[in-house]
Amino acid sequence: MTDWNVYLVTQAGRSDGRETRAIVSEAIEGGVDVVQLREKGVPARDRYHLGRELRALTRDAGVPLIVNDRVDIAQAIDADGVHLGDEDLPVRVARELLGEEAIVGRSVSFVEDAREAERFGADYLGVGAIYPTDSKDDIDDDEYAIGLERLEAICEAVDIPVVGIGGVDADNAGDVAAAGADGVAVISAITGAADPAAATRELGEAVRAGRSP
Image 1: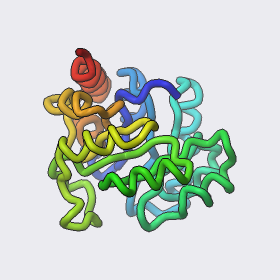
Image 2 (image 1 turned 180 degrees about the horizontal axis):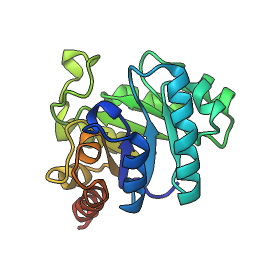
Image 3 (image 1 turned 120 degrees about the horizontal axis):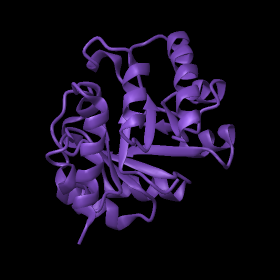
Image 4 (image 1 turned 90 degrees about the vertical axis):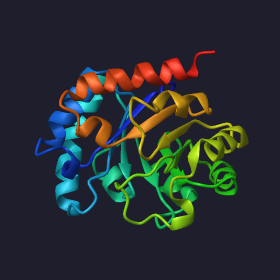
């Protein structure tokens, strides 16, 4: 992968009643670079069936599909990789199960964790929450809203791509990129938008502008 500008994380509960497949299709139209199947709270069977639909969409568009948490679902739908948190399988184990070609991402909030994830073979990092967000109900207080300064420190500490996540929208995505992130990962900024394709384009423009000297 070379482009990380806009990374969509799916969550039907934030899609204003619209189907995740439709949101992803519109995001692809808008130039999304990566799609992650999240869908917290959805039974594994339903995530699997949705994942198969998204796999077909993303494969046709040449967009990588990542599965949140579940290595087994990533294997079952032939996804491009998996994104792991603190309570998920270690990066090294996921790599052994999915193979060397798989994309393995890791959520981190501290420099030490970022360095460790890179050392153990993570391909990219999801860093946050950058800004306050209500999309996660399992974040510790000391990890909440880490801010741009710590994001910058993490970006400087590793040589793998970093995407900033948490409270990111088109208004602040440029600041996240200016702090060193390769892109932004969002849920509501796309899934809750009246026009997901336009929202995706706007985010991409903001990231590229923020990265410009």
